[in-house]
Length: 344
Image (tube, rainbow, N blue to C red; front, side, top):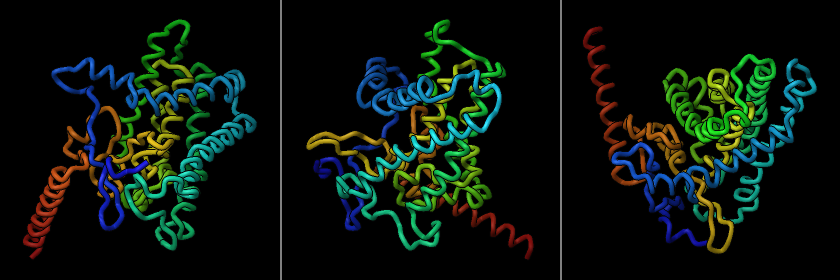
């Protein structure tokens, strides 16, 4: 599938989509109910394809690959190690499938690839000087264990009645509503944590590790410092407060655990046929990795737009971001000058 009708490629080989990034028709006035319904149920949209996939994966995990709640009333090495192995296998299969197809076999070459270069090698910023190895180590040695720890604690709390429980049979409408709202909560939680991690002391101590991936690939998605993993997977703690079901908690964690793969895949589309492709919806986050201080969130709630950090990929947005950077630099220079005047 040719990417030329969908974007432009510069002299460095970097590809840029023609279509601007847009927020979905949710927080708009006047309301557009038909457009909202098309986005909610249409393809591509809110449910299809990705959120339905994560919800389906969580459902399979809960019904077929999670120990009974009675088993998890007491901590034991057996079920804890089982959950750890289960999550590691899921991660290897899902992240590995993207990496194998796009970066090992290179089935679509650089078609729809934002950055014309491939993952870095010989770079001292990465463990073993290799980006992919570095990313896999942080993912499997830190992300998966901490994801599992949050999951185990939450399931243990459900099993012992320490958190409010809701059953589908008794409250089907509420149950379905919580499932729909999990991705919205993930968006809000991610934004808040992400902005916190860009506070300079935390950025340099913690978040910089993730931003070493200026040219991200699928394994970059969960390549984070353990402190960032602690904050990132804390999204599941909402289920300790809001009445919900273990399936909701697993969906929340599966979404947090798997969504970073397509979100960092480095390609705008996954070509699946001669004239067919699946949108990854990853360009907004690619721009965040490229420019660092824009597009802190990825989803439904237009937080970046409200707080002036939205970059839609256009020339106008680039100019607005440059003006914001210049204004901040000017204010910092003025502060330094005032300090020097006082000390002088």
